[in-house]
Image 1 (cartoon, rainbow, N blue to C red):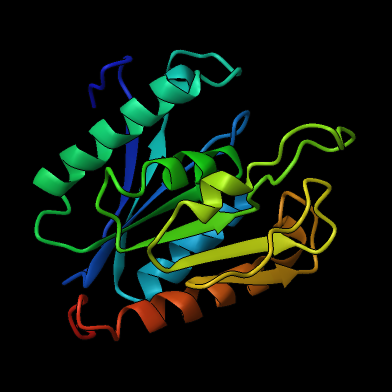
Image 2 (image 1 turned 180 degrees about the vertical axis):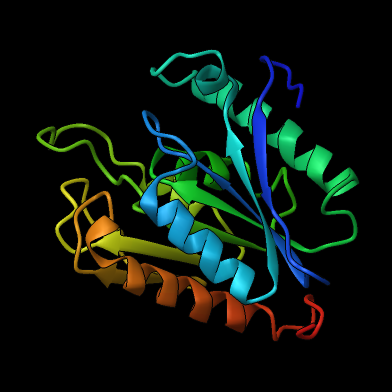
Length: 204
């Protein structure tokens, strides 16, 4: 899929008669096969959400260092717009991702008209750098329902709960992979609560 900053890859996980769509991005140095993204995808499919896993252009080009925020956000918004016009047409959308991808989704939530944001391992502050500015303003700027699934041993920290923001801690580090069942359970429960609101169709 073309974006303003090169082609992105979109991996679709469809369901019959989807009630909504979920678009997820990967971490800065990882890919869409990250265990927590796989767990979230399975949980979402089970709740009737079609899922698109987005591989950013810098990863498609073979680079490991992430693109600047403005480029990453623009590419993400372009992909979501394409999905809205085609595969996810007429579906309410939830956006999100793991770590760096969660930051992109938060910054772009308004631009993508997201009905909710799912953050897996939101990186509050780089470990070992207490003087570095935290990224909470990106999370706080989201005004739609948000779920943060965070490892209890995450060296990037744990964001606080806030109005319209739930934080679920699981027995894991930043990768979340040591408690994937809990990750899936948290995602399922939260998507289920979203799907009973007036903005979402009833279960298929």
